[in-house]
Image (cartoon, rainbow, N blue to C red; front, side, top):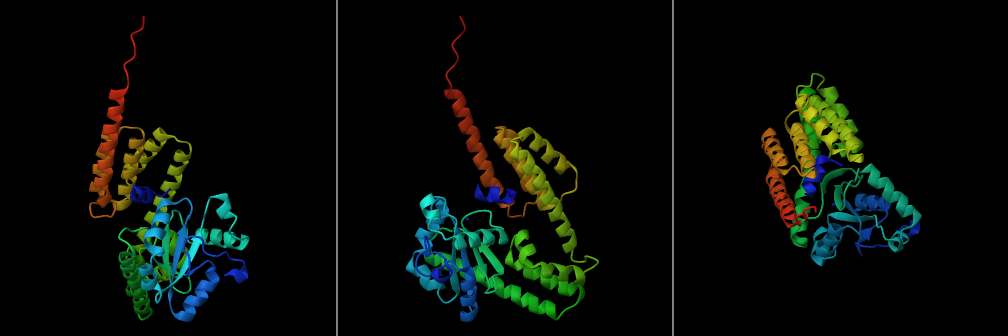
Length: 326
């Protein structure tokens, strides 16, 4: 489980595809057909990865936004809507054809979907350029949010065009700007934009942009997460804590990577009900990269720890004293 995800959570019958389950009228379940339609109509794709019968935020998003006429009207000229459903109730699973199940599984892996609901905005070729999830506020606000995200594609394409006219580090900077504008996760970039990464390296062999160093840092952090998950699988909190502390002390990680590691330490300590130490670690994490997105979540995390500490103390007080032994 990705650390930042933990913190953030603190989202055609002719081919045998089923009719809509959650999205209703206007939603496609045939990805290939949806891409063709988007290309023909010069629209983008809005893909809803949903668990329609078990994911509470998926259900709320559909109820508050996707089922509303204001949403349908607001997106009809911009997006082809695609619903990829992953139900759990046997009766709903049975409604999905084998073709749909195979397609949805393939797309979940291809787009590296780890949580529901996940909403991807993609161009007609299926390349993602923005990602979002449930947002409160109703259909009009959600449509405005999608319009803001859709503008990222314009920045991407403008940066790509600039890169095509440039050479050397200038070309690399334009390509990096294109990737950064989309704010996609590393797995999505690796899957859908590997050619861009290769072009950056070729245009900037001396790594004047620092992009190569950034990739190396991410690779090291991914290895850290993999090893940490090994401790989590064994429910070895003491081992996990020692591993994180050793990794932080190694000096191999900088800024936001170090921050995420210290935040992980805080979460482990919280699981061990060492709340004072956990809150101290939260302060350390915030100080490691005070301008980061994660730093903005630290105050809320600390408030949750204070509440958990108070609840744990209340339970101790409520516990009846043992009768003296006779």
